[in-house]
Amino acid sequence: MLGDAAAAAVLPVKDLDAAKKFYEETLGLKKENESPGGVTYRSGNSHVFIYPTQYAGTNQATAIGWVIEDVAGAAETLKAKGVMLEHYDLPGVTREGDVHIMGDLKAIWFKDPDGNILNVVNQMG
Image 1 (cartoon, helix red, strand yellow):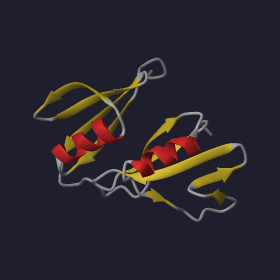
Image 2 (cartoon, helix red, strand yellow; image 1 turned 120 degrees about the vertical axis):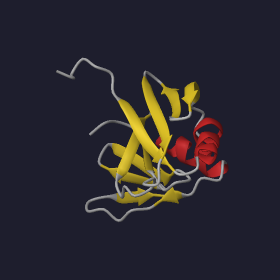
Image 3 (cartoon, helix red, strand yellow; image 1 turned 180 degrees about the vertical axis):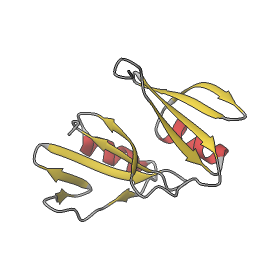
Image 4 (cartoon, one colour; image 1 turned 60 degrees about the vertical axis):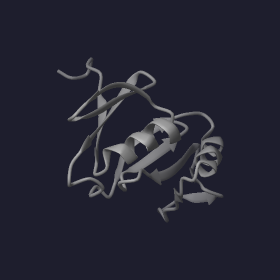
């Protein structure tokens, strides 16, 4: 039923202005639409929708991930913009600096201003 439909990440935020600054200036997402209910961004062929709610930051798992080739480069770019990278101790995972290594998969994690956990990986699964 939904296999041919586009999917979008939907992220709760407490402070819409701070979130807009982070997603636009820090991550470089392009705003497509804004309403009192939230902001829709384009990210590659996908969308990210942020909306204000008191429940922002309560998810303790990865909320959205981006697939790019140069994970280490993304880590350096994010750090240069003041983003703190997360370090997790996971079974079977080693780390080279800020990059978590799981076989051929490389990943970094960081949080947006509301504590939503975001991720960059070099491949899916």
